[in-house]
Length: 83
Image 1 (cartoon, rainbow, N blue to C red):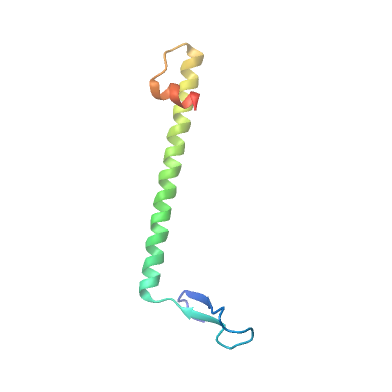
Image 2: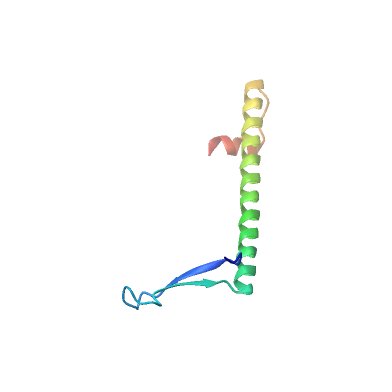
């Protein structure tokens, strides 16, 4: 068995049982490159999303601590509590 990724192609215009209805086709080099680029972009987007969520949580913690201590909040901290 090959280590090359494959794709499943189903031709719905063909009747059930037709030998070409379902085909497993190896990906081209271009398709592999495109999928790798998409995976890298998705990973970068997820990292950015997690970073934004962590920053939002840190802002909430800071605002809560200031409220408890009786210190004035920044506009950004007030906004995060009102949302």
